[in-house]
Length: 171
Image 1 (tube, rainbow, N blue to C red):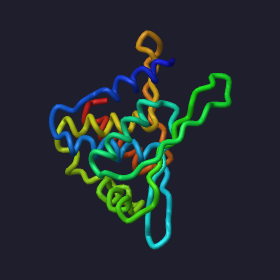
Image 2 (image 1 turned 45 degrees about the horizontal axis):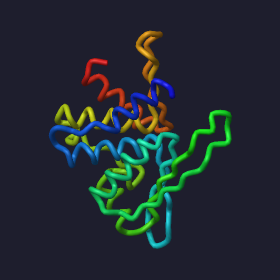
Image 3 (image 1 turned 180 degrees about the horizontal axis):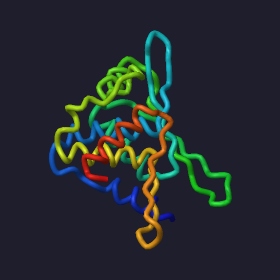
């Protein structure tokens, strides 16, 4: 197991001290922004899918979606085909009006939606933002080697938001 996987597993066990509902919402939103895919259905229905090699990340998101939105979710486990034989976990929420409302609440729909800056007023909310972004598309090296923290996203606007939050922590 890599150091980044260890860090993600530890982050998945973290329980926010304050602003728990908002922190979970921010974490799920950022995680899905980094690694999720929208599923378009008929009549304006929207769903979401996240594929990850880390079962703790899949369980964490599953727990948040069930607790916050009571959405019906599906989890598929597929055995990896590469040399490491790591399983892939795919969590899906089928397109529906309920899932659309949840995605609107998470500021994921419409796609041009940005995270409201008011969500980042507390330190716990900022931690949740970085935790979600890291769980969805982050990597880090062991502190004993060269320092390297990385967030990979294909969304330039969200990359700017990550930089903004990192600067709030003087990083």
